[in-house]
Image 1 (cartoon, rainbow, N blue to C red):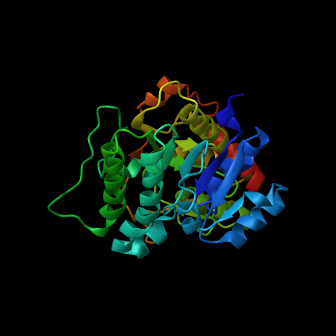
Image 2 (image 1 turned 90 degrees about the vertical axis):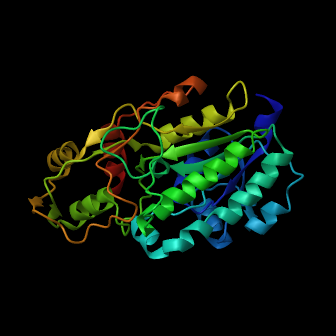
Length: 315
């Protein structure tokens, strides 16, 4: 164990479901934390529920700003918008959702260039074109002369990543998340998988179209492995990496697995009116970019095995 591994990891946005998943798993591995958020009460409830040290509840983002001279093992930024319905409601306000907190983390990273700053980005940074998997040679495609609110989320992520590349003396890794599955999923969100699980839990017929789509679901355990690889990389880097599982899955395979395992009832319609396309339609939303393997990341679960593992805890 290195001296740095005894230091706490600063988590910004500790009330996010991904942050809670990560802290839960990492705590089992002996990691220590300083958790910052806008809702200290929610953090305290989470720590109490899992019998984790309540001293980890480090307070507000302003209090993080006051720790600029402290030494952390890493700084992880989970602040962002995770629900497509909320993203649609926010409109242009989405640009301010994480910019202020990212600025605080960048100020820390510029002083402590040997401490990794890990920013949770999104596959949406690639823009609007998702007719095939993205790769290390893909370019971000944004209709610059016709930007609409569906593109604001993508633009915000591209802007943040550009700021991080400009801070080229700092150790900054942007992890682009495409899809994520967790037993902590908000079943009131408007994600496809949340609505599917709700249909199973309430024994209501799931209404969908026969249009197929491809997704790659990252499991919390593999997400932990990815963060661990970023923090323990031999040589600090300033770069983006794409998150991925052992293998993606298509919608029809998900539905068939849910029918077999949970007795899901499905009805296919030509169109479904209540689908929220808040950040643009994504038929094939996953990445073949395996740059993460170069820093030691090796996933252990496929999209299907991860989905079923987490759904078993929910249903």
